[in-house]
Image (cartoon, rainbow, N blue to C red; front, side, top):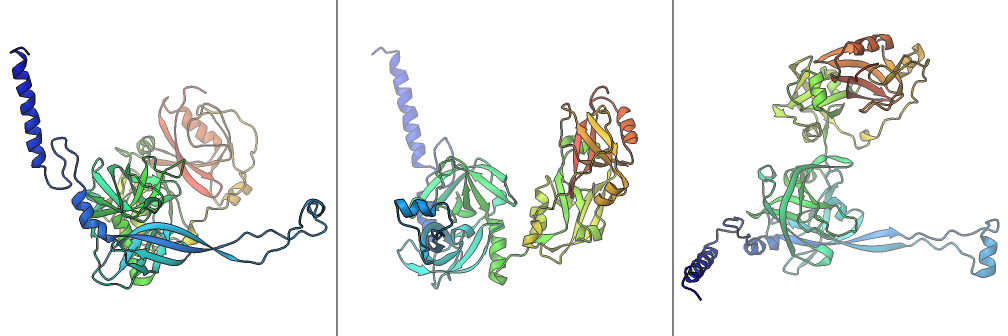
Length: 482
């Protein structure tokens, strides 16, 4: 070995020694510094005993073979080649499923997912010390997927509740549960996203993680590195039924609001104000005279509903609720449903280029109130016309069509050319056009075509539309020529 290579070897040795010394003085659990991974052992030892396994028994009706009559075309086939099916007596079969949960209080209140205990005839809770208890389901709420159980026990270990608002994307998180029946299994990962919307559910701003979550983890806690519960593992995205790197947890503040109501009255009530809303795009914001996109655009207001009685109008953009900012449309239902029915709130709406405050008394949401409206047949076109510079073929409504739609005026979109880019279709009715915060009522096809002809190429135009019983806004850009 040459003399020149010796100092390099000593330098490498010094680096290894320094790294080893740093490892001996690693910061406390949950902190990641100097490129070292966190140590989860202390978190597991302290929080593991508060996590429980849940075994559920469900009664399932057995599907029986119908009895064939002699007139049935298959009767002769079974008579010749086999036994003729006879009606079997009804019998309930027992199905078993598993899940996870965590102890909320020392006297035996336990939180899990509603789908874990759905239709349960018996719920058995097993602690880490191997004790088993039959649990009573105090209540369950399918909209938030939260259920509250109670076992008869005292001096139980319990979790500490954290604040999901302080959770940051990229932060380490840990799940403890019973995947595939393997009790008290710990998995770790990071927060992938916050406030995630999922199809068919806009009331829960899910926490997305890449923590390994599998069947049986449902209802188990999601911990931050301080050992606080910040979510309840509820859903996974999977094409195989197993972990694929996309897991979703209900934020603990949403869950605790549900738990509190279940404890107090055994059911959950939610607020409503009676509006249909949509997202505010950049083009729509320009059309309504807003400096930047945000808030919830009111498509329609329920007749005689709380918002209508207070003076909220279609075309208003709700930007605040009691000084709480509505950044996107999905923020509004989450804020309103968390308000106790009967409470008076202050809405700040953007109307005609300026903010306006409106006091609204929140009503109670009925579970069957979310049924989709019945769609009417689209009005029949009056006569064929040429496309305007937007690519829309417009015709006037007849008196019967206006009466059927219960509107004073409007213009029918008879046809849509292939150049149109936006949420418009034949059969829609234009109620108004909004530009720079000002709404122009649609009175005739000639009026709208003349108005559009005066606009500059590329200018955004927001249309207030009726489609069946639904009302909404669509923003398009003006094309070049006729």
